[in-house]
Image (cartoon, rainbow, N blue to C red; front, side, top):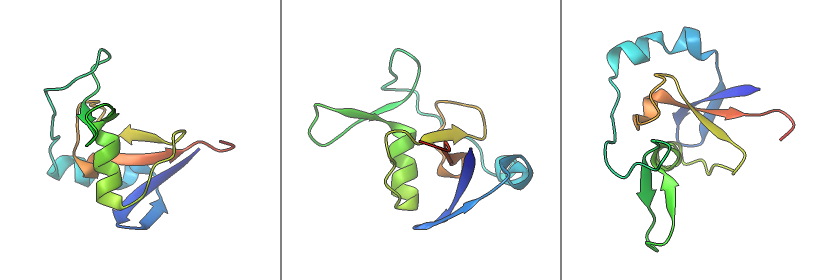
Length: 98
């Protein structure tokens, strides 16, 4: 498993989130979405076609980094809060062999 940190648009680097993110989490509070939650409690965002929705933090990650997520790529919340949409709390995890 490789963990990727979004530094800026199109700049992704592998990290150890438990060492590098202590300060970020201390100085950057969660941004919680409380509406449009699915049955599992994940925040959703409707796309322009109004027929499909995406998990909000995946959209936030893509907009923040400029990276288009593949279906098998996972976004991990460093804060542990699935409703958090703060892009600084989100990291990409690529599963090896996928």
